[in-house]
Image: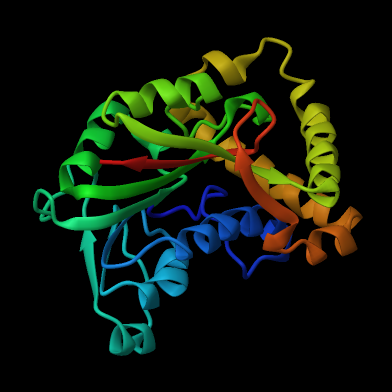
Length: 258
């Protein structure tokens, strides 16, 4: 994902990505109500978390495989440390040193998800909390080759229990406008995947599908934006909500306590 700007990394600069971008924003807005002290973001990506959350932390530590842009203004007004590394492990982060860990749309990319959660547990102080989001496979429209796996609500609970005894499993839900877009997207994708009569998306190696998936995904989002411009452009983060998990949530929203 370093050379290719994949559809996995949503940007507020592309109007066609507004619906998915706002879906990410609601998670940060919810985290902003909770966090304090030393905050570690695992998977800082395009820097949404730093912009939304750094001012609420005494020390904000951002970790990503690739460089994350941090403006001079943010650096000047907040204590921010950026560590460029692959995870797991969480290199340079000491045991019991972090009050909150935020990791949004990351665990689905991690091969060893149990170790990933073990590392998050390791760096949290006793009583510290991890806030994690990841797609609900029950609502995924097609296979993403960028994802090692996705989880049902039951599976999400099971993987959290591998490291945490205490957790809340919630979900990100969309209102009628968001679900109208979801259904239009689902139908649009169906028109593309109907040509995959051999179900190759499910058995070909992931690396073979990454580039075609990205091209088709961006093409599809652009078409949806062209055909539904007002709906796509007017979705805001408050069109999403977070409540108790079920099979119809778009993303899992998890709060695990050490």
